[in-house]
Length: 92
Image (tube, rainbow, N blue to C red):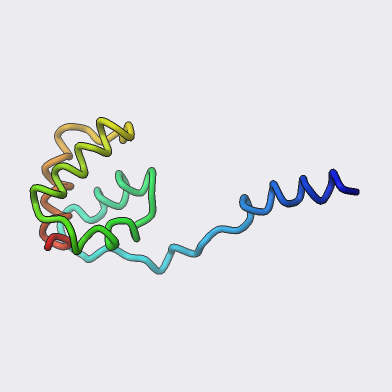
C-alpha cells in the first residue's frame, strides 16, 4: 500500500499541468517563429515576465544565452527576427 502511495505521488506532477493556452504573444511579424522556436523549451509567460527588464541589447543577450547555454535549436538566420520581434513587442 505504501509503495502505491509513493508511486502515485511521483506520477502526480505528470498529470498536473497548467493551462497555458490563454497566454498569447502579441500579434506581429515573426510571432509564429517566436512561438515555435521559443515554445520548444518554455511557455510564453517567460517572455512576458522578462519584458519589463529587457531592451534590444538585453533580448539579444537573452536569445544568445538560450542558444549557447541552454542549447536552444534556433537557426542563426532566425536570431535577428526573434530579437526584433521581442524588442518591438516586449522590449522596455
